[in-house]
Length: 382
Ligand SMILES: Cc1cc2nc3c(=O)[nH]c(=O)nc-3n(C[C@H](O)[C@H](O)[C@H](O)COP(=O)(O)OP(=O)(O)OC[C@H]3O[C@@H](n4cnc5c(N)ncnc54)[C@H](O)[C@@H]3O)c2cc1C
Image 1 (cartoon, rainbow, N blue to C red):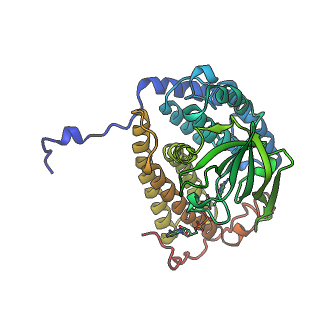
Image 2: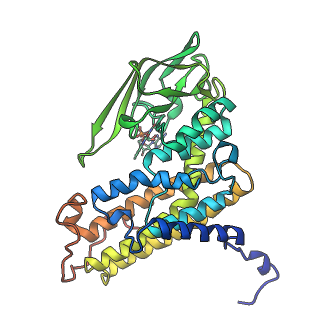
Image 3: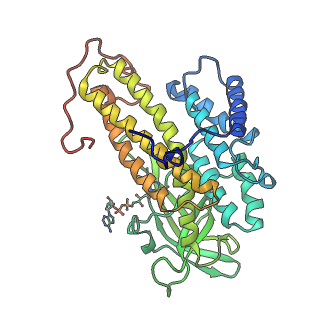
C-alpha cells in the first residue's frame, strides 16, 4: 500500500529517551554487582534461599532509593520520572528479581503515593520514611462481607471521641493483615450522607485491643487473607487522609495508583512469565503440541496488547494526569488474562501442577511428548 500524507503522523515512537537509557545502565551495573552471575531468578531458588534473598532485597533497593525513585527528594525519593520507574521494573523483571516484598506494594506503592497526593505535611514526614525503612508495614481495609464490588455500601463506621476516632465494623479479604503494623481503613463518618459520600480514609494501628485479626486458611494450606474486626478500635483524629468525608476520592486515587502503575509495569513481568511458559512447555515435551503452541501465542498477543494499554496509561502520567478509568480496564484485562495463563501452565504440567512448589516431584518432566492437550470447553481464548 502506498504511503498516505498522514503516514508520518501515524508513526508512534515507543523507544525510551537517552536519559532513561543512562539510568538503565546504572541499574544493570547494580544488578550485575548485587546478584550472582548465574542468577536464576528468585522463583528458581529453594524456599529458604528465596526467603533469605527477599528479606534483604528491599533494603538494598531502598539504599539506592530505587523503592522511591519517583518521589520528591525531600521525602527520601530520587525525584526521577515514572519512566525511570518503568526502566527499573524492566531490568528487575529481566533479572528475575522482584521490586520488593508484598508489604512494599501496600506501603511503598499504594499508601505512600496516596500520601504524596493527599497527605498533610505531618503525615508525609511521619509515615514516608518509616514505609521506606520497612519499620511500618501496611494493609488495605476496603472490602467488607457485604461491600465488595459495591464498595460504597460499606458499613464500618468511625465517630470522633475527643482527639480520637472510634471505629466499629468488619473488613474481609485483608491480605497479610496477620503480620502487619497498620491498615488504611475506609469507614463511614457521616451516616446522613448517601453512598460514596460521607466516607473517610483513616490510618489505623493494628496492634491494639479494639482490633481482632483472624487469618483464614486457603485450599493450598497457606494463610494469606484475614477477617479484621474493629470493636471500639481507636486512631488519632489527625490520621484522616484527604479530609473528613472525602475518603471516596482518596480511595479511588489509591486504586488508580495501584492499577495505573501495574498497567505500565505488569506487562514486563508478564512477558517474562510467557518466556518461562515456553520453557515449561519444552521441559514437559509439549512445545510441539499445536494446541499448546496456539495458546502460548494467544498469551503472547495479550501481553503485547497490555503493553500498549500500559503505554497509554504511562503517557497520561507523564503528562501529569491522575490514573483514570483506563487503569481499571487494564486491571480487568490482566486479571482475566492471568486466569488463562495459569490454566495453561497447569495443563502443561498435568498432575505435577498439583504438587506444591519445592516438593520432590518438581521438574522431573516426562521424557516422551504427551498427547496434545484438548481445548478447555468454555475457556478457550478467543
Ligand atoms: C487476591 C486478592 C486479594 C485481595 N486483597 C484485598 C485486600 O487486601 N483488601 C481488601 O479490602 N480487599 C481485598 N480483596 C478483595 C477484593 O477487592 C474483592 O474481592 C472485590 O472488591 C470484589 O468483592 P467480592 O469478592 O465481595 O465480590 P462481589 O462484589 O460479591 O462480586 C462477585 C461477582 O459478582 C459480580 N458483580 C458484582 N456486582 C455486580 C453488578 N452490579 N453487576 C454485574 N455483576 C456484578 C462481580 O463482577 C463478581 O464476578 C482481594 C481480593 C483478591 C482476589
